[in-house]
Length: 166
Image: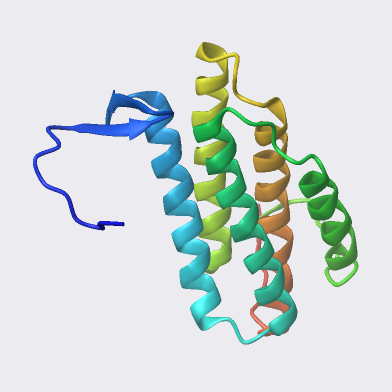
C-alpha cells in the first residue's frame, strides 16, 4: 500500500466515495486520528504499566470507531462497559472532589481533545443517521475516564491537585 500520494486537490476516499476534506465525516476521522495519536504521546512517556495497557485498549477502540464510521458498522457496546468498569476500579484510588480542579498534565489535555471529538460526532449524527449512537456514548465515557486516570496518574506522581475556587 502506498503511503504517499500527490495531487488529491482537497479530496479523500471515505466509504468508497471521493469526499471533500472539509466534510464533517472526514473531520471526525481526523479528530479521531488526533486523539489516538495523542494517546500514543502519553503512552510513550508512561511509566505505569497498568495505565499503558488500558490506553492501548482504548487506542484499539478508537480504531474500531473509525472502522465503524468508514464501513457503516455498529460499534461494540461492550467497549462502553469496559470503560465504565475500569473507571469504577480506578476511581477507588482517588478522593472525591466537590469543586473544579485545575487540569494538569497531558492526560487532562487528552480529555479535552476527546470532548472535542465527541462534539464533532454529535454534529455528524444530527446530519447522518448512519452514525451509531454508541460511538457518542463511548466518547462521552472516554472523556470521563480520561479525567479519572489523569487524576490517578497525578496522584501516583505526587502532583498536588488544586481546586477551584480555592
